[in-house]
Length: 83
Image: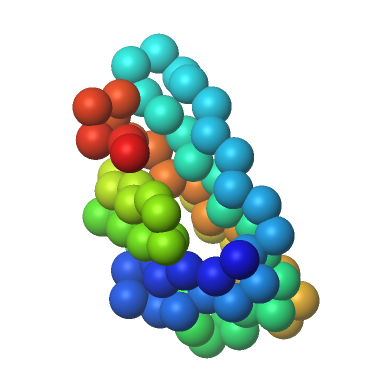
């Protein structure tokens, strides 16, 4: 699976999971082969937008990690804004 996160094309997304936490939804994205430089612009508590072929998630970036082999991103969104 692939998609776009804040304008950066992500190849090889390996999993996307969602869980409800109170009135919010946490969307966790994991993938392979992300360049740390592709994601170096990320800032915690900033706007986050994930676009896939059939889904769009907008919210706030609450966690991320990347190395030369993989990446993890967590977006928190209000129940009403997660699609």
